[in-house]
Every structure is written in structure tokens, then in C-alpha cells.
Length: 146
Image 1 (spheres, rainbow, N blue to C red):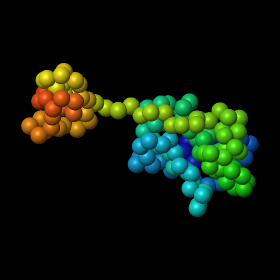
Image 2 (cartoon, rainbow, N blue to C red; image 1 turned 90 degrees about the vertical axis):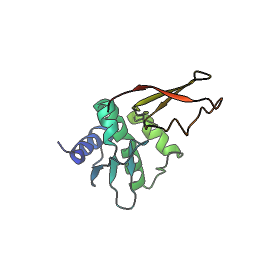
Image 3 (cartoon, rainbow, N blue to C red; image 1 turned 60 degrees about the horizontal axis):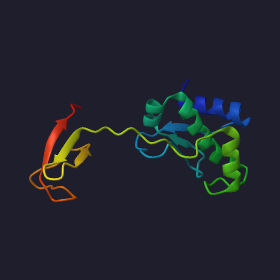
């Protein structure tokens, strides 16, 4: 089953209303679970959250975006701050906020003076960078292979 078919199924089962547009994966989304586009009615979803959180959480994200979708086309308040949106989201058990993504720590540095740890995704130049607390020298203590 492709994404659009899944969103149509969720729409019928949880809202009793048809989803008549397209749904797309958008791997550039980083902090949101999905987006609704009122201009053409399509929905974008974050594939990373689907892989990390599983189908149960993803279904709640789909419900959230479908709340925007159905309220917009009914002429009701479809924005996060609107009462109509909050009430419908509660009725269908959708997620109010997207869950935090798991971050991958590749490098761990430690200040040689105050012993403070720094976890980073990217390598830093220890000759140029110093501790933000005490200006001590940093040393790479752990490197995880990617």
C-alpha cells in the first residue's frame, strides 16, 4: 500500500471523510511530522519519523495533518491555535507535537580543565575550538564509526 492509499484509509476510518488529494514523503522535513498545503491540498510526511517511531505514532501524525486538511475544506479553524483544530485533534487522538527525533552522536570531546563533555555530530578542530565554560583545551575521547 502506498502512502496516499494509507492516508485515504486513515481518513475514512478515523474521520469518516474522504481524502481526495495526494500524500508525499518529504525527507527534508526534520522537526515536523508532516505539513498540509492549503494551495493544492496535498500532505507531506517525514519518513524519518515513520522509520524511528513506527506505525502507531505515524498514524497519529497522519491524523494531525488530516485535521488541518478536513477543517480547511469545511471552512473551519484549521490552524494550531484554533479551537476547532484542538477539539478535532483530541477527538481523533492525534499528536499535538511531533516526537523528538533520535540524534546520532558521532564524536565526544572533553575539556581537559573542567572535565565538561561535548557531544557532536560533526568533527571539530581542537586546535581552534576551546571549552565554552572555562576556555580549556578539548580532547576527542570517543569516535563512533558511521
